Image (cartoon, rainbow, N blue to C red; front, side, top):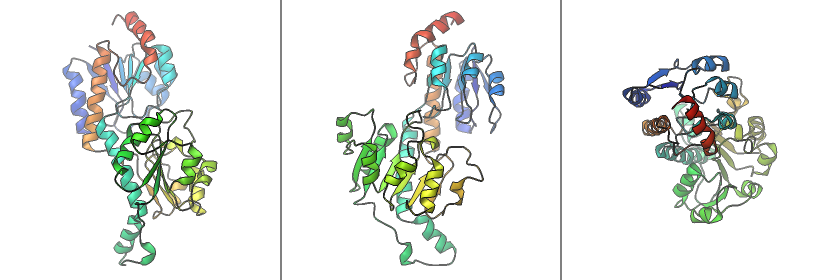
Length: 338
C-alpha cells in the first residue's frame, strides 16, 4: 500500500477519480478544503508520502521534497507546474508530471476567443447600460474581429488550438515561440516572428506560455509600449508573465484599449490590486477558472490518476516534465525497495 497526499480542492468529480486509487488499495489523504499549506505544514503532511498531488497554491519547495524521503512523484492535476521546484525534484530523483487533458486545453482555447469577442463587442458595457435602464448608444458599438491581426505568444497545445479556431475568422495570425518549428507554425497559418514585431503588428495579443525564468515578466513596460494604443492583451497563461503594474498604468493612461486576465501575479487576486480599480468595461478579470468545465476537470483528473498508477508501477508517466530524472529516479526506487 502506498500513500497519496492530495492538497487540491475537491469536487465530486475529483473525489470519484481519487476513489480509484483507494480501490487499488492505496491510502489517500486529502488536505483541508480551501486551505493553503505553509512550507512547514506541507513538510509535515508529506513526510511519509509516495505521491503528492499538489494544488497551485502550494509551493512545493526543495525543503519539502528533501523531507519527503519516500516521495517518487509530484503531480499537478492541470497543466502548470510553476509551483513545483522541478530542478530540485530532478536532483533528488523525484518525477514531476502534469495533466494536460485535451478537454482543459480546448476549454482554455475556447475561453480565449470568448474573451477577445467580449472585449471587441463591448458586451460588458452594453449589458451594464441595459441593466441600468438604458438602451443602445452609438458610442457603445463594438468592433469586428474580421480583418484584425491576432498575435499568439506561445504556440504549444493551447496556442495551437486558438490558431486552429481562428483559422476561418478572416484574421491575420502571427506567432512567437522559440521552441516551435517554422513549418509547424506555417501549417497553422500563424507564421513565426520575433516578439517586438508581433507586439507592434497585432490588434490582439494573447499569451499561452508556461511560466519559467525565461517567460517571467515577459510583457512589461517596454513591451506594452510597443503595442498599438487600440489593441488588447489577453492572458490565460500565468500571471507572472505580465507585469501587472505596467499593464494597469498603460490602461489608465489610454496606451492600451483593454485586457482580459484569468491569471494573476498573486492568487487569489488581492483586494487592493491595481487591476480591480480599472474600468470594468475595458478590463475583464476572472478567477483562474475561465477554461474549467466538468469535462475538463474529469479529463485532467483521469490523466493525473493514470500518471500516479504508472509511477507506482515503476513506469515513467508520459507527461513527465523532468525526464532527465529517469536514472536518479530508478536509483531512488531501488533504495526504497520499490
